[in-house]
Image 1 (cartoon, one colour):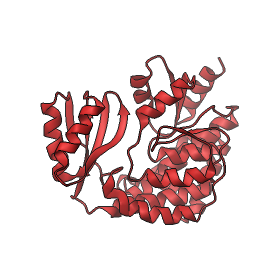
Image 2 (cartoon, helix red, strand yellow):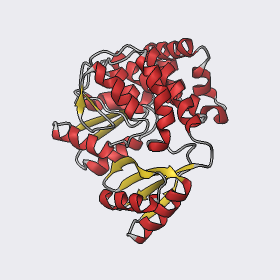
Image 3 (spheres, rainbow, N blue to C red):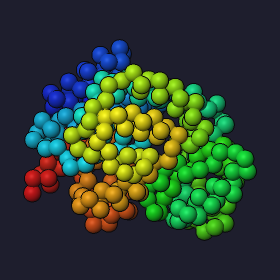
Image 4 (tube, rainbow, N blue to C red):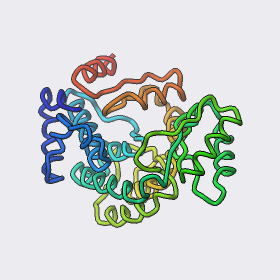
Length: 295
């Protein structure tokens, strides 16, 4: 992951080198060579994805890409968006997301929490299912990804009950996810409290372009607000559907997904069917995106 960028773009290479120096160990080596069991550890996955994303961005900028009109990121990706808009330094971000990963992993003992994807069930019905399934335990929407997909999180028993209720209410699919912790729900409050201490010691700047926040789906350029939003998002729902709708309402018709994979492009197409979606994760996709962006 990211080796192609490292080998082809000096600007990307500089990002990997900065990440290694900031963390005090070679995250670049884990990105390029694994092993898989190390890369999939949350404390490594989060800084690795952030590093590859910013390396792709810097490579794109070095080839002539100009500043976007807005930025947004899904969960961890919000850190990439904030860095892209000048709200925080990359060094601070990569150190913070490593701690974020550790805190989130340690917040809930293994086997206590779970997440599930609910497909083709209206959000209002998913919310009702969660409320009915909770029975005094945590169960709530975690990722409001599109009108067709909502991910829920909470206690294992409550999620199991919600899966069965969702099927009864007409969901096309309701399936438990293979995740290491129940992210973006109240069970993450211990992680949020620990991360708040870390974020309090960092410097944030007002952003060059507006960020569409995960926690509210609203626009923000305030450096002071960034700290609050990044803190709250640990235990709050990711309002991706609302975020994309806000971008479309502001006239955005081209979305450039920067970093590993094309998951967000698929979600954007579910929400805004006429949107143009491009992705940048290696030299080939970078050059293809540039060709599209200059036409």
